[in-house]
Image: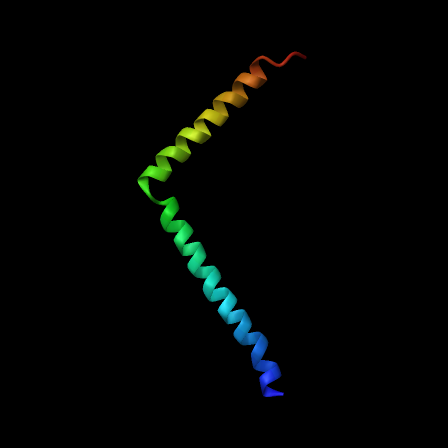
Length: 59
C-alpha cells in the first residue's frame, strides 16, 4: 500500500522538476538581448501590418 501511495507522488515530483527546469531554460533564453530585440522587431512589424490592414479595409 505504501508503494501504491508513494508512486504518484514521486512521478509528480519528477514531472514538476523537469517542468521547472524547462521553464527556467526558456526564461533565460527569452532574457537574452538578441532575442529581445528580435522579438520587439517582430511584434512591431505585426502591429504595423495590422494597422495597415485596418486602414485599408473597406467598409
